[in-house]
Image 1 (cartoon, rainbow, N blue to C red):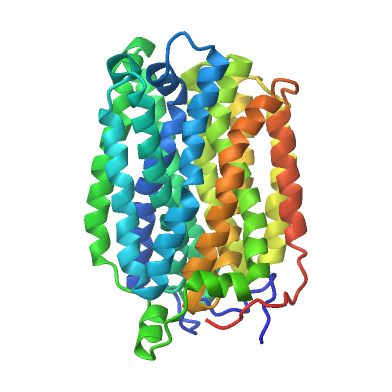
Image 2 (cartoon, one colour):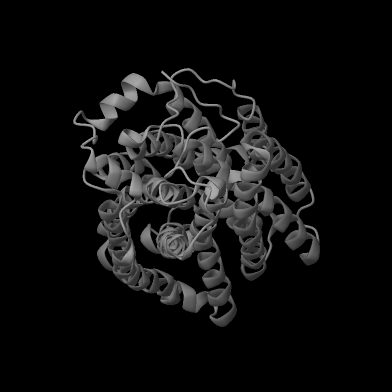
Length: 440
């Protein structure tokens, strides 16, 4: 059995070729990234309006901390649903094709997002309101569980070897662009409408528009082509007849552990630094909502740029060097940001943007994760390990940090910095990892 060096792209992630990116590659990247942007926007916009949603979908006489905890619980439900949706979608992605499941996942995201924007509140229908909201978040979670691993596999299997990291980094930047889109929408709403108008009706706009644009993206994905690697598997009838998940659990456990640990780093960076922090700035440091969201939007831009940069750097210097520099930098800049709060408007934006750039090292997870599994079970392997880890760490992190910050206001900084140290340590995983498949 062959082995894989974590630090170098020994696995050929696509058809063996040193050709440059061509027009067809750019079309694949563009349409995949656009769909990912819209789908991830649909998933994360919930957290930008968590305070308003909590006040509308739960009893008014609940203590504020209890309402916030319940709202974050519904947010977490989306993460807990990811493994089931991801495993099912990935199973059929390995059996009948990447493209079909790639289109299905965005459809399953768009419809619940549209429904959330139309849901009646607790005042109108009582306990049914949070229950329906919970159901929609579960459907969204199932969809996103298949989307991100599917997008990474789809693009990696289309990309030439020499631009493997750049292609995955660019795709990941498109997915994080969905966070930027949600943040920009939040800034716009808070600038144009009063808090009373947002509470009464304007909060619905980002969900309704997200649902509509998501359905448009479903149509656009019909112009994509199946990956060359899956076409080759079908041609030589090498699609695994066994349940892919059985193969993964029997033969690729160590690869699953590596992806799960890197997912812990990724989920913490995204959930705490990007999704959790705007509300944290408002509640703990009393920073105006518009200012908090403005700084978050700038940080999300640098995150998006960072995803491309760290993917490109992995092509040039190797994955280990990129992991050490990227996640080591995240640890340092995390403390720089949180320890200088509230600061001035300029310092808030500058330090938030800096840590955002280093959070872009999250694109190194798919760089390692896609090549960790052979093509026959690649979608399932990446989806299973990524989504199981994200369900635990992504779902519990907001509640953990919320409770922790009651006794230590620097709790977000400590947690993110610890994950940066873990990311650096992962860069020194043994060069030959027993059980990792090197073939495509």
